[in-house]
Image (cartoon, rainbow over all chains, first blue to last red; front, side, top):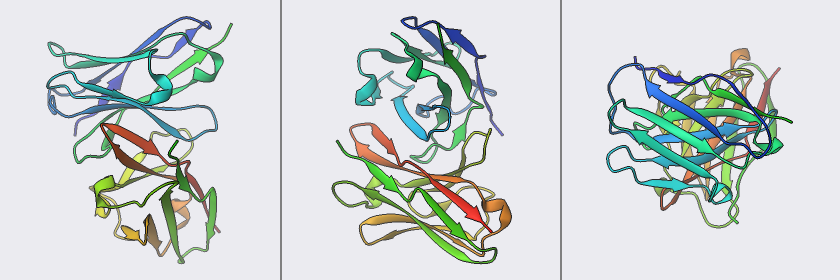
Length: 117
Length: 110
């Protein structure tokens, strides 16, 4: 069964940017949409963005417009989430998820991002 | 701004049946919403329970079922077990590539 592997925890200062990566453990499902979802401490899940690996098209939650970019590297089948202008409220676990059935079918383990001065 | 609303908390006795719901602040949930449901326990990534409104994900017990009830999506647990005590989230497709999670329901089984 395919797993999603995410990059390690990050600690950033306010105003900085963070990049989180995500790739599948096997080179499969290369054309399946990838979502990014986050969860702040003690809070619920929040959808952030999705990317279509086939053409790189994206959609973003309105609250992140302008400071969030999701991309993919087709040569390595690695997906990236870049979030800029970080503030303390961005402290969260960031998950990537692979869509198989118009859903969030396979989840990565999450990447902890802490924003603190 | 559209919001997806779930009951903040629910309690059920072991062996009992509970229905959690997922509603839109404006409009109705339909099959075009690609409703899916997730279970999450503390410290763990979410687990997919239901997709496409009512299709169980692989390995999910048949005591979990999804449906549309009126203008809401519903997740029913029939014969709840202590292990079902978790947070449950729905997510809806809003169109134009946009998805929206509900706030989640904390289910207690006691």
